[in-house]
Amino acid sequence: MKKFMKFAAVLASAMMLCTNCPAVSAEDLPFHLFGYMNGDHLEQLQILDDKGWMKGYVLNRLRSNDTNENTPYYVCTYHLDTVWMQSVLNTETGEIHKEAQHIDEYLMYLAAMREDKLQYVLRSDIDRTAAEQKAEEIVQKYFPEKRPYECAKGTYLLTERDEALRTEERADSLMHELAEAGLISAFYTWGETAEYKEIDHGFLTVYDADGYIREREQEEGKTYDWAAIEAWVRKHHPECEFVSIADKDSELGKKLDISYWYHELLWGNTFYAVIPPEDISFADHFALAMELYEQFGLSPCAWPTSLESEPGQMFGKNSLAVTGDANLDCSVDVSDAVLAARFAAEDREAVITDQGKENADVNGDGSVTADDTELILKKIAKKI
View (tube, rainbow, N blue to C red):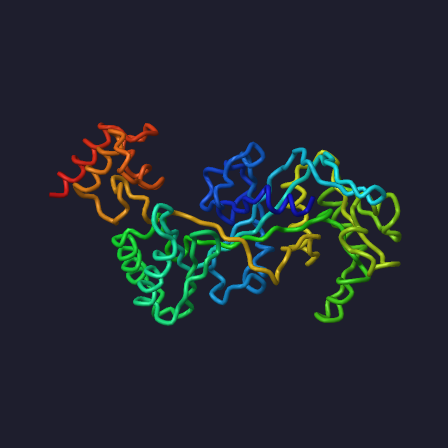
């Protein structure tokens, strides 16, 4: 089930950091991921982390030497309610059968912008091997000794740590040469690529008083006054319960997922939990956890997973998305009008990429027609 949640629900982005958990649609997000933008479960997302709790993970744990205090990052959650058919092995008979798994929970993801990465996508209508070699030769003209990394079929990443080389002018020149050579269908400049990680979470406001908190007390010389914390909760959040749990395998411990999230290492530990009303929204529960973190340094039960593995990649705005540029050569001229006209006339030899079709659809009616050809010509005429 975990693998399904990481893969089938792979949108991991949100809007800006300092917000009050607004709902947004998937189409409004600044990044998207390999086409997994559709699906009813992705229609309403909520932006979280207005307290900046995840900044430490962005700065210290995501695999980027270029992150800094000003690196934008995004955290969002959405409700996944679906049925997944899972293959189950019968150990007695050795037979495999399908079993329905109902998944009903909130998922969270963290995405951080990568200002040190470029990304391009090779055209699918050309010879891949020759295109790879030619593109690499062009890349090394602008970024010597660099070899692009293929992160997905036909999609290449280039990381540049040297700020002297990491300029918009250099990226723009590279894009133009790759485009003029007819090699690429997409190009993402600095800051238009992000990396994402799933955020595992249990019950957000449960705390292990004898484990990591005791270690923190020893390391940082700070103490946690649980009586004072309880008094604060009763004063500021009378709708919540403050409870102590001595047995993680108790009915309440199981309800709060303590056994799952803290594993077998914590036998005999004491846990405290702030339990909000059952009808609280996930975003409000997250906000409560952030408030306790801000007031007392109590870290919520949540963390990005798979920190040692390669993060997933997300894309922003394709720099080749230029209205009228049907052939994706980074300029709008008569050749674009000719290509659009041939495509509109159903000329089978008129090769045009998906991004080219979007660019050629100047009037935005969802198709490339003679009207679009006329509009491209008008756009050219205004430049003359």
